[in-house]
Image 1 (cartoon, each protein chain N blue to C red):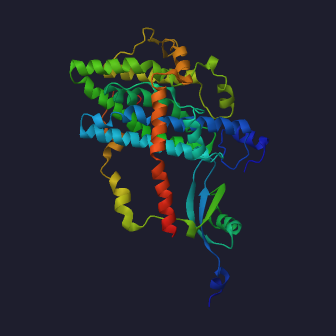
Image 2 (image 1 turned 45 degrees about the vertical axis):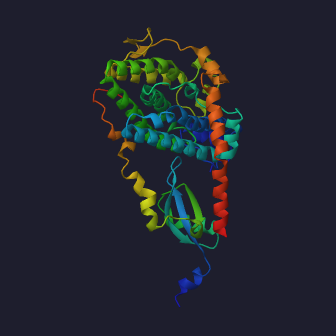
Amino acid sequence: MPRQTVVDAGWPLYEVFVRGKRGLNHVHAGSIRAADPADAIRRGSAVYTRRSEGVSVWVALASDVAASVPEEKESLFAPSGDKVFRHPTFYSIPDDVPHM
Amino acid sequence: MVEDEAGFEAVIARNDRIEPRDWMPDGYRKTLVRQIAQHAHSEVIGMQPEGAWIERAPSLRRKAILLAKVQDEAGHGLYLYSAAETLGVSRAQLVELLLAGKQKYSSIFNYPTPSYADVGTIGWLVDGAAICNQVPLCRTSYGPYGRAMIRICKEESFHQRQGYELLMTMMRGTDEQRSMVQESVNRFWWPSLMMFGPPDTESPNTARSMAWGIKRNTNDELRQRFVDMTVPQADALGVTLPDPALRWNAARGSYDFGEPDWSELKAVVSGDGPCNAERMAHRRRAHEDGAWVRAAAVAHAEADRG
């Protein structure tokens, strides 16, 4: 059996979120196997911020992340498809009207 | 992470952002909670004046647009309550403070909307003033607030344009429609100017808020910016703004304008505006009427857990 499997046994999967700099949102960067949250932060930053990609890291157990399922795509996202009037460009304003 | 006052001051001094887990002065936290909550409440109460026109919109197109706009306001309220929650308060707490009359919302929503043209005027003037206020807040020193403002500003652009387009359409209509627009603009002009708050000389907290980077401009600066942006839009629309003192000042490169009636602002803020009681009664009723929905959601979640 490859050694890696033995090392990871029992280590849960964490999702890693990285903040590029102050003022920005944490954005999902990827996942990491780790023994506990503190370990996941250590490993997560080692893997995802080796080139100054971030100033802050969040981790969350992957099993705690609830996600939409592909079959729900229609009911969740389709309703906004035909609502073009939600976009500012739907309204024509003459070019000579400033600051609009 | 910022761990003490020196660290906090250093972040503020280099115009950087404070994030939720950073050390921050109590006054900074309290000011932000008050400002963000007031802003969130304004979005929620702000659904009422226009919401009243959804069922009476003159076409399916206008109805769909108005629904989408009011729905956005609800979303904006949620973004802002979430930003406030990063400061250690809960949404439920803030809602209670609003319902108890212990936190405020923007004075502008205490004015009535008796005419359909008001839907257009609110989009143009009220949302226009809100944009003037909110664009600089995208650079506010508190990260979660700034990020909420960025989302909101993107969406406000639709709000302002649909309003202006609505008014342009009415101005191309009959004499009666044109006078409806003018009448509505006459009612909303001064209250829109008051949205920026009291004059700088009577705004004791402004200096502190600006030193902390929470506010980026004074009330009077933003009010002037709004007037300068709006006058040419009024000209293009073909309406007059009800201020005899309004004129271009070439030396300043800005418009001079008259003094709003500050006693009116004081009265509206302290509860004596035309619709304060109605807005609060409606909000309380909506909150109480919605109690069964909140209870049902919890019951459903519990049933799912089995």
